[in-house]
Length: 116
Image (cartoon, rainbow, N blue to C red; front, top):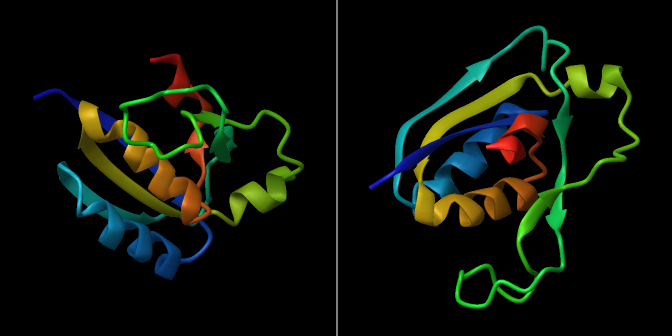
């Protein structure tokens, strides 16, 4: 089983806890929530959306794969309010589902997630 690291940033601890509770239904390891007073620390984090590409059989519903939205309209100040980090490892097979959960809970992920 291959695991991928995933970090997601949330505005409130409740949002992060809510996401963690839902993510626990997947194959995950080393799930933790941390409060970062500096927020994202200048890291570029992006919201997620369905890309619209067809991915039949991947279990992502009918919306296609999850991809970053490049133009967010969020200022660096708004990004710095995302001071709760949810850090986990998720089974490669569940990675898209994990991204979907983060998206639904209004989390943001580092842009680099999509460079892997």
